Length: 236
Image (cartoon, rainbow, N blue to C red):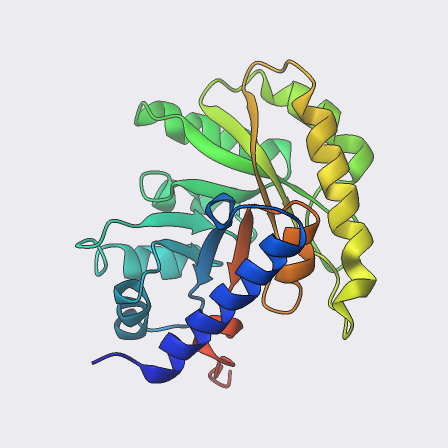
């Protein structure tokens, strides 16, 4: 049975994506919608998949490991979008298709080591903290180029682009500069000839600001609440 609210929510997200694309003369096919399934049960995720969602984003390693096998009958692309601790890499290295949160040498070293063990090149996005928020992870804009050059020494990591999180704002227009700066950095890196870097994805924009992100060049958007509704967290 189709969940009517999820169905309607996806339709509304699609409408907004299409409108943002029209405003900037972009093709809808350029945008990948990632369904962020943090705290969402396998049954509900399955309903979203039946409604066309193929990209699944998780913030926590334990949620990926719990849901991966249960959803194995579907042809899915798995995204690790949350902060990734080095000691958790071994649990997901064979499961995720794209890691969005590469932001430090220690993590790169562990990713490379674990990927080498299973003879797999792991795709990753470098997380950039454009607004330099203390509460968020990611590299400062000016440190990204040196970090990318350092990553040339890790042959089992392929950098596929950048991931950015904008500060929360009641008026999403107020964070447009973050997405604009990220796009400029993305294009700057694209012009460099770095051996293990392919600037393919610019992951930015969530439920409250993905339209602005699309207008400024995002091609991966991460939407959870907009699809599944407000999350009900268990009390500690």
